[in-house]
Image (cartoon, rainbow, N blue to C red; front, side, top):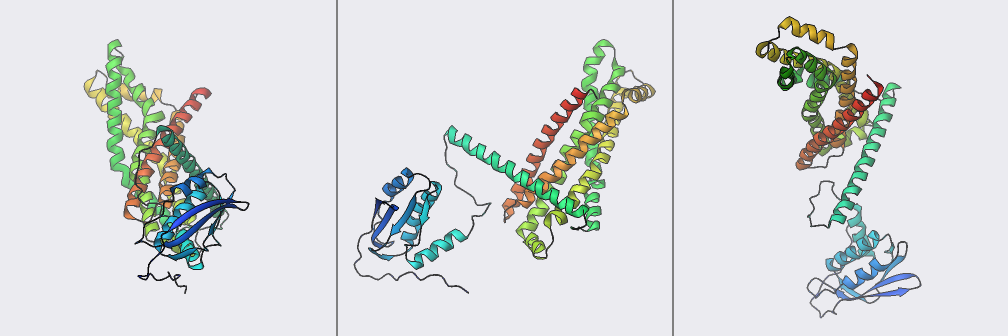
Amino acid sequence: MTTAPAIPPVNAAASRPPSIAANVTSAGLEVAFVGDWLLQSDSADIEPILARVKALEAGQRLFFATAKLGRWDSLLVTELIKIIDCATGKRLAVDKTTLPAPLQGLLALVYAVPERLDAQRVTRKMRWSEALSAETAAAVRHTKEMLIFVGDMTLSTLAAVRGQAHFRRQDLWLYIQECGPSALPIVTLISLLVGLILAFVGAVQLSLFGAQIYIANLVSLGMTREMGGLMTAIIMSGRTGAAYAAQIGTMHVNSEIDALKTMNLDPMAFLVLPRMLALIIIMPLLCLYADLMGIVGGGLVTVNFFDVSLTEYLDRTASAVKMKDFIIGFVKCSVFGILIALSGCMRGMQCGRSASAVGDAGTSAVVTAIVFIVVADSVMTIICNRLGI
């Protein structure tokens, strides 16, 4: 068991005023502390020192001189942290070995505790160039995190295929139950309404030419090739993707993931892989169900509000939709399932250790999944168009 370094006691004796100076030597920039650095005394201005530090070039050495340093307390520690952080930002070589041993111990303790990922920071106004730079850096960081997560997921999948990683099969069936049959009511409602809306929108133009019979073509092709899979994916990203992020994030808060690692269980294989397999299995089935519900919704409008019989509607639907249209919808929905699982599980694994962080992870998972879905759908639609299918 280690003990915190002792801070020299403060007595009521007359203290020397603190001062600080910076001298350029052959060894680098020397920052010298003089006098007593106590909270009750007037602090020395370190802004000129920070300006000297910022003027140095990356790789130059910064060290400290404390031969004339008297008594000190947390005032000196806070000022040192400002100088060291400034030097670190400039990528300078900071030499702390010339500081008193208790001070070195306190600084080691300060920099040994990592900053919480969900720590609330004070926002400040930034210039547009600073904001653009910060957003670019954030985008690069998120891309790097996504690539690392996908790489870890790929390695865990290969390990599971080779029998080197395991997950509980009952978990897979549980996740299939959660994201499959339990989602049927909301998928039914949304798909039925989408088919109904497509029929009404199409009928507005087609009725001008007396071609209401082609409402069936519009609804069936629109649902099977595009809207069925897309609406199912959006529903599942808000329902299942957010749930995955919240479940894994809560496990992160409760240190359950750390416990899995302690037991030599791979969290990627144990937590992420069954969730992803469940979505990959269930999404095409949900897509087929959404297609049928959309066609039913379109049929209700076409038969009841326009001069088209049920037989004519079904006949036009059968002649308009080909097997390739269903296959394109299945492939798209399977890709959407992978993206939803990746987004939800990745945000859950990156979650901080607080309740607010779990909420942020759920929100971020939904936003990330929808962005990926729209981009992937656009790319696959362009590919299908260029291939003529």
